[in-house]
Length: 265
Image (cartoon, rainbow, N blue to C red):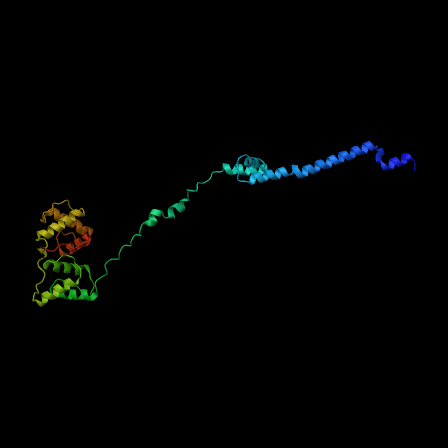
């Protein structure tokens, strides 16, 4: 092998030693550039991302936001433009049903008490028997406290100067028994006896004025104006509008007033 062929074998493409050294230097420079890029240039984005995740805010937070992809940035922009409901607002259904703290502090309202239980039938039956013997009651002695029975009790209370309640009570039964034991078997007086008591008529006039049946005067005189008021009251209570102050009319007035009329003092 001659010299020219030996030179061609060691230096491909007919490269001279100078060109070979130049190629090696260029290769080393390129390798160094790749190494520097891998070690240093690629570290910067990781540091930038790490800075964006930190809680310092300021410039680093702005840089991290700028580095977000366009799709994520658009999503955040849409979220900012959407209307939001303040935390203090609640749906109408919750507002209507949720009790306030003020209401919760109030004691629960008491349920209305049941009506007064009826008196024992034995008590009513004994009162009916005594009233029947004295002529105050003509109904059945069945122990049922009807309106007619109550009216009879009220008439007896009036004659005995007791408060007019029309209720079957132990006091009424005792008064009936003691009167019979004392030999007092007198019956009820005339029907007009209620109208002859000025005190009772005054109480009736006050009651009629209170509930708007008359405008007065309250003078204890059962005049035409008072009788007209009694008729209007009787119509409202589904009674015959006679305008008389009877025991049944008095009982209905006691029921409407919700309290007994005072006795005949």
